[in-house]
Length: 184
Image (cartoon, rainbow, N blue to C red):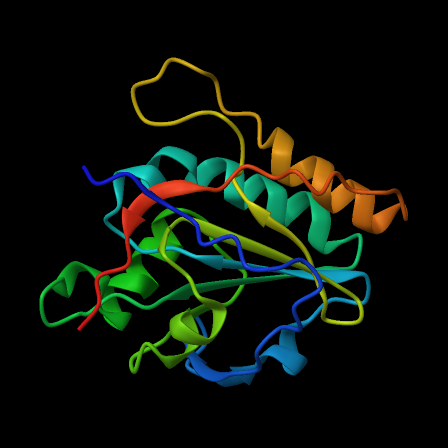
């Protein structure tokens, strides 16, 4: 199991736009279509990564907790499906159903979106404010598969709360750790 850290792009970076197909609805969406009134969380993830499987329930809880507060939630899979067919759009739809993911789960077939975001691992979290400026990039919390630390979502939840309630956010942010994106 690879342990690849996030690329910590500069805070304030403007969200790259995209136009990708949602495997839950079969509609195509842009960042602008899906952004929230208070901010937007973009999550790079996939179906088979043990790090994603470890945190998927917490990701769904965070989505359920914060969408009603004006945070747009977007998941994107960019893995090479020729080498990793378990990450195909059909399997993404099944994964979303099994895990009760009812926010957009987009397929980045060309991997251009992952490159635009400088995404490195799954899961990789990017939180943008309502002006599409990056306010947080980093880990969900300190829990990892097998390390015995319980899931809390504390780091990401604190960042979202700071955004919603207009509090200052600590600029010292820990990178996410996960499997590397499977590049073509």
